[in-house]
Length: 112
Length: 114
Image 1 (cartoon, one colour):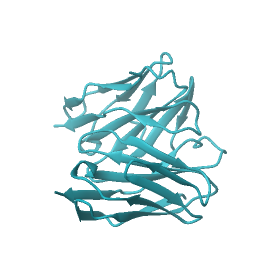
Image 2 (cartoon, rainbow over the protein chains, first blue to last red; image 1 turned 135 degrees about the horizontal axis):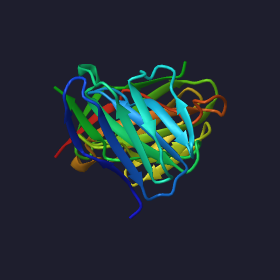
Image 3 (cartoon, each protein chain N blue to C red; image 1 turned 90 degrees about the vertical axis):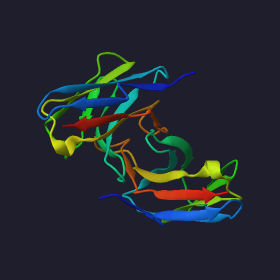
Image 4 (cartoon, chains in turn brown, green; image 1 turned 45 degrees about the vertical axis):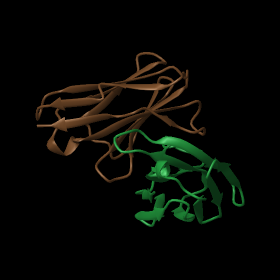
């Protein structure tokens, strides 16, 4: 089945220790998105790629960066995680920017 | 700034008791309104897209409708397996680097008791 895969499902990191979250897709979609969802809150878009074209939301902290080495994979790098970065990180894909977005299962990040 | 408000925050129903969830929105030119279902600890699951006022979509016990200011998700004869958080999101028309961005509401937590 075509799908969006996120690894790991659960990640524990220490305050200030860099961490990388991974997303892969078998849908062959052009657009990949990263959202942050804190407990009982709405998902919030961090950035997205249309093919190799990177688009950063204005309020995304500089601490968050992303890489998309090819169509199938996208990574979220958090350079120096703070306690406030503990959240569920959701990857989503869509065929084009105006089509429905399909989400992966998420990575739950804990910062100690 | 695009805004989405969902009500109620939580809804408890008995199995078979039909009801509706509301999603009110303000957006600078609506491209689409999306409904998602989210189970605890999982990513949102796509349900429907609505593009214009008057449009309706149905899937099993769910029916989504759209006006110029709000959308409703009607649940007919719900079952316990329909228990989840239902999220509404809007997407603005093309223009700028945020095209494609979904602005989500806080969600409605639906609990259906047997």
